[in-house]
Image (cartoon, rainbow, N blue to C red; front, side):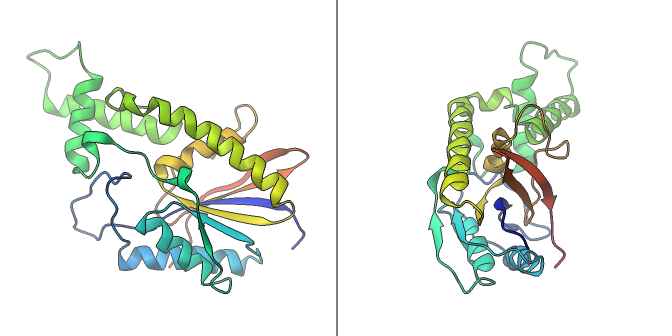
Length: 231
């Protein structure tokens, strides 16, 4: 495979089993991968190796779920050392961190609907407002009003990804770098792209999925996004 500069952004594997209460897993909720989550990390490494991609460096957020996923990828490359990159650490969702997703949908909906709630407003309507706000967060990285405290971090993440992209382009020219992170952080990697180029219309990465950026002619472009290898 010809030498090109690649940045592969990976989301860690599953942290919940089927039937578990799904929580909003932020930086304050440092939980390990499930057995399936471990297998998903391994599948990413297997998929990349089978594609003939030689990985030269692996960076990961210093959380159990991201480090283990990175180690599973590294197992396909001679157990190469995983380097910690702090900016890849998931967002701190404040009072919502570690709380049931079902409860968060309602709370986000209440905040989104502030000023328009009446005695006739139903819980279902509030939940729909919450779902819509969270969907916009996933697809466009638009913060729900309930998470406005994250605006400074979101702005910093765009700067961090831009600097990381410059580092890869200069220090790893012709090489491949893997960055293992969480969904809340991965979506901001879009800042690497020029103009309005989209990542398949949705910024969300599924658990155990990855996207590939290619650097050529002085700019980054998206080659793939949200690729989830079969187990």
